[in-house]
Length: 331
Image 1: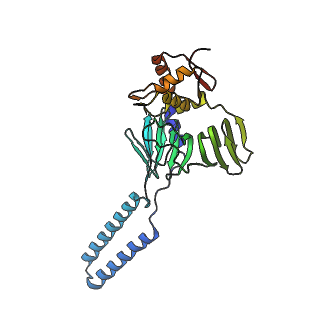
Image 2: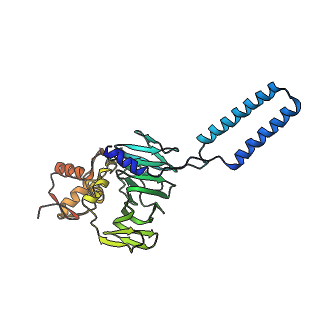
Image 3: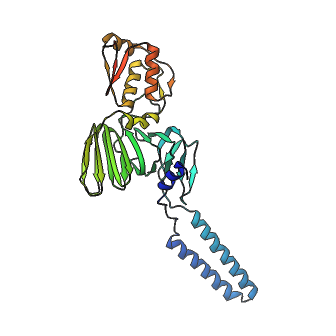
């Protein structure tokens, strides 16, 4: 069995039950059959007509059974997100727990369950504002425009993404929650990552604060913290870097940006935000130069690659040290 098959088998360990006919529907069909039988038996006693009736009743019940198998519970569906970038193997979970591969999915509706394979990732523009990313081997049910349910894998949320990302509104989202089997995660103006694996809920905060309500304990995580919830144990809080390899998958799913008419300074701020690093100028003249420099077109590269390409083109000295991008003359 391939790694991808094993990953998908793990994600599908809990299948959704098939819909059951409503009791009122079953009673209605029985009443209709009984009434027809009484009419036929009262007026036509012939064996031939009774036989035809029996066949018709069987067909009616058969059709009813098939329709109930196909029918899904009535629900109001709404668009909760639009896809800005996707790659790898992505599936929609069907009513019978079957996986349907999707290559050109553009929007996400409430009630849909999305599963990413071992080579996949997705960037979403949340309908009420903000940017959502799904990592590989992740299973998410999109419940409504406030909430998603993370069954397995990892998601990232940024409530105030750069305005360079087309289709995303920043700062307007009032509520966003990630529900899991181990607790509920609520943003408080932030960038954060939520992961579920092996009976553990793990929340890492890059910026702002996050409210985490576990089954047994609550904790408000702040910038630079990672909090882990396991069973009924007290939350374990550790220092966690806002940049580095743990966040690489977020950059890999970064959506394209439109820099047409924007300044090089705005581009640098976008790159810094996506990489979890501050931008500091070491030369005032260089800072003014980049604020005046107007860019053109779109950029569809990972933030780290886009930063290298742009700075090489500008022929400006820069360096990265820990959580800071220094721009200007070398020190």
